[in-house]
Amino acid sequence: MKKILFIVVLLSTTVAFSQQKTFEKEVKKISKKIEIITKQQKDSLKVKVEKINIRLDKKEITKEMATALKKEAAIYHARNIERLVGLQEQKLQQLVQDKASGKLKKITETDNEGTFSIGGVKFKINYDDESYLEREKRRERRRKKRGYRSKRTTSQIIFAMGVNNVLNGDFSSLNNSEYKFWQSHFYEVGFSFKTRLAKDAGKLYFKYGVSYLWNNLRPINNQYHVAIGNVTSLATHTETLTENRLRNVQIIFPMHLEFDFSKNGTYNDGKKRDRRNNSVRIGVGGFFGFNKSTKQFLAYKNAQGTKVEEIQKGEFNTNTINYGLSAYIGYESTSLYVKYDTNTLFKNSDLRNISIGIRFDFD
Image (cartoon, rainbow, N blue to C red; front, top):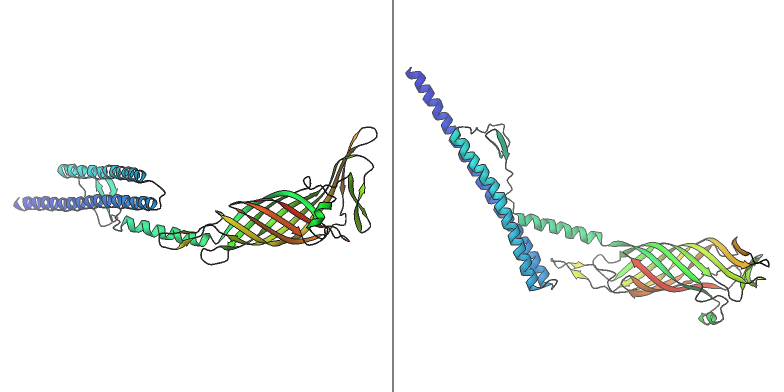
């Protein structure tokens, strides 16, 4: 009987000691979690306050706005601490109740690190002693590094339009042009890339891409184009024309050296930040391409009063290969644009196409 009583007392003592040891261990884990939560929220608040101060120094916000933002951030993280710590305090209360009622289970050797059971419910605490602030700084460094690499080349959508005409030797020939100046139009739609030539932030770029171009020419004095053999010339139509237009559709590959005078910014670490299309831009270069199609559109009323519309398709002795010079100057995305074909418009002719208009470079 004494032996049995001794064994019972020994087992009871062992169980009680084991439960006490488990209880103390879990209390320490919950306390550690509360400490981590508090530190993370305070570090997060510190990061936000630093960012607000940077914006204030750059005069992006007023002093009153900075104070309001700091107060808002402090309230947010104080509520986070209250909510998250409250959850841990509930676990602690449940732990005390289970210890008093003898429901506390000992953590076995196979349990995962940071996992324990209370009243048959498993809990897991993930420990992370690393400072939240340090992690945020590393993320910021990675973001900056990606930013430096990604801004070497950007892309734009190009749209241009304006007046189109021809030169016969020099600019003075525009005064005697046989084409209507304000009614002859051009349109250009394209896609371009803009690559900075310097490794770090700079002002000089190489711009290149592809464009679809429509050049329209409207003759004066009721004239239209006639191709006889290898010569294309203008002749007077026998009917009164309400529409007389020659349209060349081209695919061209423009290339420019662009000087972008946008003011560069600076990152927190002192490295220059490349900014573009925020100031004056000057582009000088040229293009080459080919003529895709040529059509002449004519409209008039015949002797019976019936409206007649003609679409004449043919080469009209236009040159297949096109090349020339182009330039633009402007501010931000809008520029004044000039394009001049150094090749002749027609074979066996001295006429060269010139276009002047407005150009948009949309990032």
